[in-house]
Image (cartoon, rainbow, N blue to C red; front, side, top):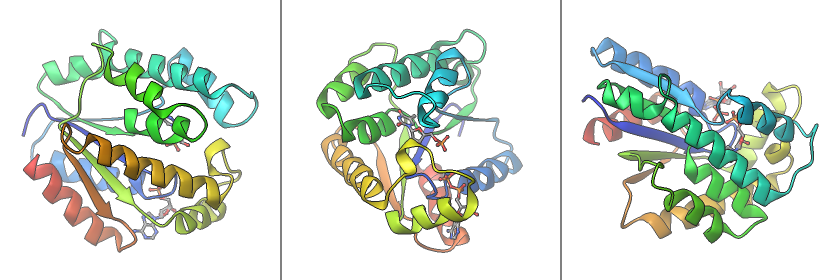
Length: 205
Ligand code: ADP
Ligand code: TMP
């Protein structure tokens, strides 16, 4: 399959980490060279973002969108660790979240079209070959977060906020349906059923 760029999106608690671990093991067994990565990254901007997410800092939504974009640009262009470098080396890049998360999350309290513009009109931002959205009922995600995590982050505070984020994702996918390859997978099912659909989508990409 080689140098494909694949993104997985979904609400917090939708099962992205669980599915990505299974997918990367499956692809590695098939002999693919896989680079598994995630946003936000751990560069300096990422550390700043983590403080905002944990609510030790309260920051404006436009500033948040700009920080996520800065973090994304470093994630793409870093000379040795960047997504572009891995693709040039013929690796398959699988990324947990990408610009769709900025549209859906920062779009809850800023002008979503502006967030889309600063990302999609930036020449360094690359378009994924496939975006898979794990669609799970926000109530289920919230229950999983409350059961499994010590404390909820900024965007995990209420089911109502998570409903709004899910709706933003669906609106964004509708806007991008002509220009991007987006697969929405119903993920209120067993881990194995979801994984089978993800593998099929990746193999068809
Ligand atoms: P994310 O990375 O999207 O935040 P995780 O993969 O960490 O989500 O999953 C959140 C929690 O839900 C974990 O405890 C995980 O074991 C559980 N989980 C994941 N997928 C399913 C599923 N299909 N059915 C039930 N529980 C699941
Ligand atoms: P995670 O590491 O558990 O996926 O958490 C990352 C959080 O950051 C999650 O709540 C989604 C949010 N986020 C944004 O708000 N905008 C973005 O552009 C990205 C990549 C993530």
